[in-house]
Image 1: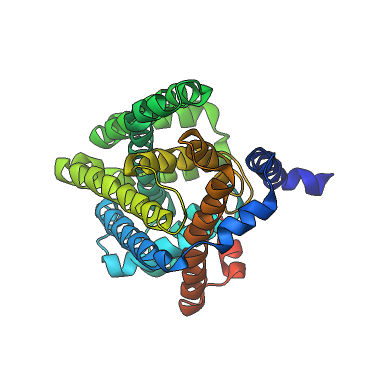
Image 2 (image 1 turned 60 degrees about the vertical axis):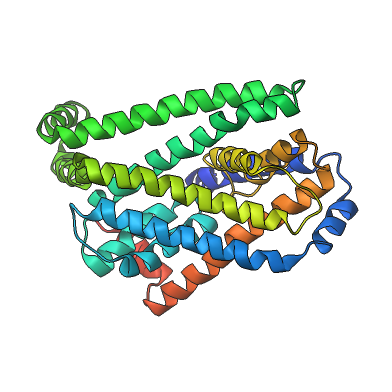
Length: 338
């Protein structure tokens, strides 16, 4: 029982994934799905994967902008660290790859973990704003296609709620960046009243470094660059969706694929098994089905897309871990260190 409680997040994620897989596959003939997968023209994966790698490079470039208040590093240095982090997200529960990325950065560049974690929080906030904007911007088209579907109203309400939350998060982070002394005083007030005495010194250090990591938001130029690069990143990922669509016998607009991209990435913020099994697939299939795509073809496309997003970066991340002599044992040891 104690062992189960220690790993409750993993078991909960597995249960969520099982539910979403059931929602995705119920009522389907798996033979038809397999036929759609077998009949795909996989040469289209080449430009699709190439577009995705360009997006990962842009992600790395964006991260160097956010890291500048802590340390100036090149995109070439940041790229393998970003890849290792995304590999960790794909094979570890609870998005542990984000923490893995901060460990690797500290190991190679001596950047404090709490500071670099602040930059990753900023990344996620801007990603969330762009991702949910894709959903809201493209819902009117979906409404014209499937006016009798409850999917539109549900997505709209969820997206508006999500955008509101992400904008509030960005606003709070911006306030903390622009007014570090007031923010530090507020964090100290919370620390003195809610944190046990033996942890207060450590929490003070962590909060100070976290505020340092938000320093990029003090520059309007950097803020603009992060917003633009975030848009480019998600458009490039949608380009991969579009290229892979050419391999299957259906056609929807690029805007429909933007909507699908936003919806599936919104769903992958839910707890799930490593690799976002189920939480990626079920929403993607639902969006395509709402556009009139045959369910078997939509399922085959979504499963192949998921694999094409998961496999290349996971393999390259494992390669970089070996190349940089990073072992899982050393990562666990560092995580357990005071």
